[in-house]
Image (tube, rainbow, N blue to C red):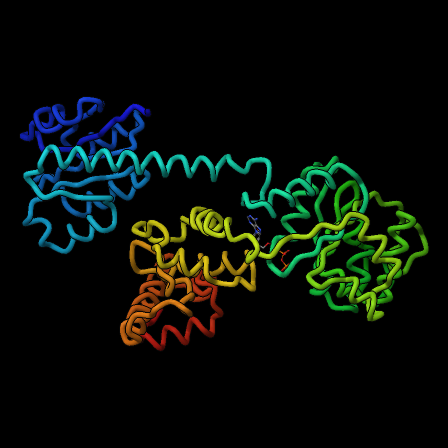
Length: 444
Ligand SMILES: Nc1ncnc2c1ncn2[C@@H]1O[C@H](COP(=O)(O)OP(=O)(O)OP(=O)(O)O)[C@@H](O)[C@H]1O
């Protein structure tokens, strides 16, 4: 059992020994009388739990807010007079920063239970953070379900050999992450990992992008340039959406895979390149081969080691852990009061089909973290309300409008009233940003 330590901030006239020591004999308690003294103590010592017994004469709400914001990694319990709790700034403090509160005069026994719970809660959070920080140190892929355990084992196996890998998986399921993991686990880990999305480069440019060009190869080519294959020398080339590679380039790629040499556009000189190729596709390439859209010989060259990334809907046991991982990952974008997911949100996450896979999950969680108005993310914040008994639509509209207004205000404030930056932070276009500002009668 971890040693329990409490930092207690109380006015000088409160006898904290008499209040706490009898009911909390197993705790080590440090009592201080001001926020400044508490800040000094926290610079030198580590505490999981703090008790703030409010001193109206000495502590203004703004000072308490600044102090608790700075020390938000602890669990704080407050004791306030009933009069304090009638005023909005104090109620805001309680909601924003405290895990629980009592009204003065506090009952020692009840207070000791609350502090015990706060300590248990802090331990759980610390354990979860340790898992997030270190639990997956060997693999960037979060998850413990059978499908991910199998995928990790496959990655480990194919990383050890040099043959080409063909990764299949739905869009957003983690194909590039899988390719990165194979590269990181291979002998080439110190070399470059060069990704290229074959579907995103125009067919007229892809040849020179991949193979490079010599000076004078075409109008405007005033200097020669190495292509992506050359720049991956000693490392791994990741060809995403390989099914989109034009037919003539499929022939060039096949030649490179067979001969390990390339020819820049506008040159006949063969350049030897040492690259491992990992290709990926969201369509079953075999079907493209059957339809004559993809060269069969290239397919067999690439598919020496096939790896399948399962869709998120087949990894139900991991979805909540992934959602919580991304909540932690983007914690700096959320309001301090936001503590996690409501039970309804967890049910909605589990019920959703995730057609956009992990990328959709990331986008929904990030959006919810910006839009949420409360302490816990709701299905509405995630945009997952289908199939869940909805609150009355007027109330929902009202909640949504309030969320939008507060997200717009926060983002504009953070960006120094810069509309483009605020739009980027919110993940919307500038046009949508202006539409939202006008809808809410707001001006940057
Ligand atoms: N198991 C996982 N653990 C943690 N993050 C993941 C996991 N799977 C995917 N991601 C994250 O999800 C996002 C999408 O993954 P990735 O880009 O690898 O998917 P993809 O299948 O290559 O997508 P596309 O087909 O659209 O190119 C990335 O931010 C990635 O880091």
